[in-house]
Amino acid sequence: MQTPTSTALFSAKGLVKRYGNSTVVDDLSFDIAPGECLGVIGPNGAGKTTTIRMCLGLTAPDDGSISAFDLPMPKEALAIKALMGVVNQNDTLDPDFSCAENLLVYGRYFGMKTADIRARIPQLLEFASLTSKAGSKPGELSGGMKRRLSLARALVNDPKLLLLDEPTTGLDPQARHLMWERLQMLLQQGKSILLTTHFMDEAERLCSRLLVLDHGKKIAEGKPRDLIAQHLEPDVVEVYGAGALALQDSPLAKLAARVEISGETLFFYTQDAKPLLEALQAHPQLRTLHRPANLEDLFLKLTGRQIREDA
Image (cartoon, rainbow, N blue to C red; front, side, top):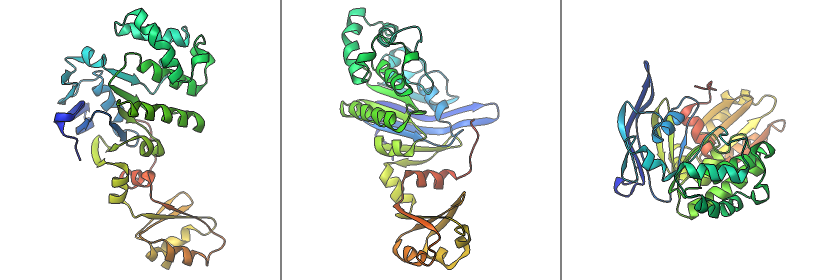
C-alpha cells in the first residue's frame, strides 16, 4: 500500500544505508500524505532511527532519494527543516532557559522575528498545558511536562510535518494520554506526522498507516486494523498458571490455528474461541484471558518474540 507520490508531502524512495558490511536500511520507500500520521514500528536495530536521521538530512543515504514539499533532501535541507518540526527521543531542552525562553530561542533559529515568536508563545504554552510554568526551567518540570514543552517547541515555526522519534518514552500513563490528545489535535488541524514508537497501543491509536521494519527492510505496510486482519486470527486466548505450558502438546492445541509461548503464558490464536474456552473449563487451576487480536500480536508475529539488545 503506497500513497500516490503526486499527493505526498514527503517521499522516500529506495533508501539504503550501510555501515561497514552491515546494511541498516535496505531499499526502503514510503510516502506521507497531508494530514496523515505514518507510524514506523520495529524491534531494536530495525533501522528506525537511521531512517529518521536520513529524513532530517543528518545522515546521507548510500542510495535512494528523499524529497519533502517538492524539495530534495539533503540539498535543500535548510528550506525543508523550516517547514518541519522535530521531537527527538532524548531531552534537548536548554536547562538554563525558562519554558517561554526555550520557545523564544528556538524560534530564532528559524529566523523568525522576536515579536512574532512572542505572539505565539502564549498559545503554544496553552497547547502544552504549561501556561502556569512559563517562567519555570526544564529542571523543575516533570517528564510529561518536558515532552509537552518539546512538542510545543517543535511547533514554534508552525510546521506542516512533524517527525516524532518515540515521543512518549518514559512517560507514565496519564502523561502519555495527554500527549496522545495533543497529537490528535494536531492531526485534526491538518498537520502530518511521522512517528516512531515502541508502544503498540500508541501506534494503533494515532497512526492512519503503519510501516513495520525489521533488519532494515519494510516487511508490512497498511492501516493498523487491516494489517491485523490480514496477518492474524481474530481471537486470542492467553492461558497461564501451573501446568499451562503442558497444554501446548495437548488436544486443546488442535482447537487453535496457532499456539505460542512467551514466558509462562500460552497464547492460542483462533478463528473461534468458544470451543477452546469451553474445553479450558476442565482446568480450573489455570487463568485465562480472552481478547481480540491486537497490534502487539501482529508485531510479535512479524518480528518474533526474542528480545534484542539495543543496536
